[in-house]
Every structure is written in C-alpha cells, then in structure tokens.
Length: 111
Image 1 (cartoon, rainbow, N blue to C red):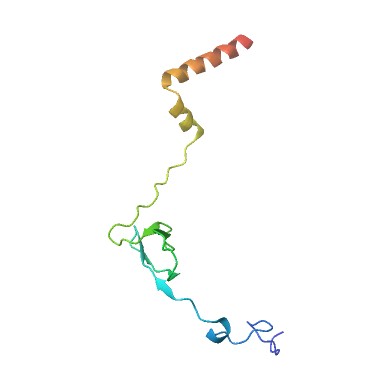
Image 2 (image 1 turned 45 degrees about the vertical axis):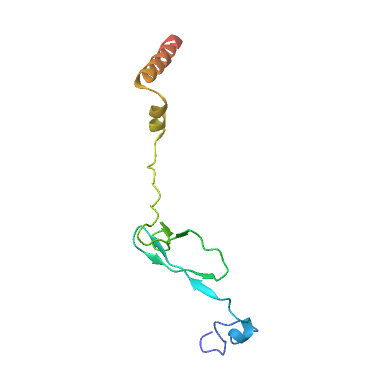
C-alpha cells in the first residue's frame, strides 16, 4: 500500500506524549557501577529506592560494584567434565583395576 494515507508508527487514540498526559516523573538518581573489565554502568533509580550492591554489566555480563578501585571478581567458570572425569574423581586407580578385573572375570565365566 505504497503512497496511501496510512499514518505509520502510531495507534488509535495516541496523542502527544508528554508530562501533561503522563504526570510528573518520579525524582531519579543515577548510580555508577564498575565491573572487572573497567566498564561503567549508570542505571537510574528512584530517590527512595534501595540501591543494590551489585549490578550486571550490560557490556560483558560480569558483576559490577559501586567501588571503582575494587570491582567484584568475575565468576569462575568450571570447564565441562566428561563422565570419565567424574568417575576418576570417585575411584582410585587401584579400585578401578579391581572393578575392571571383576567385570572381566564375570564375562569370561559366562562364556
């Protein structure tokens, strides 16, 4: 419908948006948070709102704190472990050899 008289980007009943229609905005305060990568984030909060100690950095996703010189450390990411790695944590080499020998003995008895 190119060249039509449609009004784009509005909805029925939409008027000029402004302070008169919406009312007064709540008083706001901007608070700086700093992450370990050196990013500064400044979200706004209502003056009477409780300010959190930690905020997620929108740039890198690390936690950000209020102290520029001592930001929170990024969380330690554990590498993916295979099933064998978990088994090796629970069993010693001697236990593993004994279990393997027992399983092989059972297999040979069934033949």
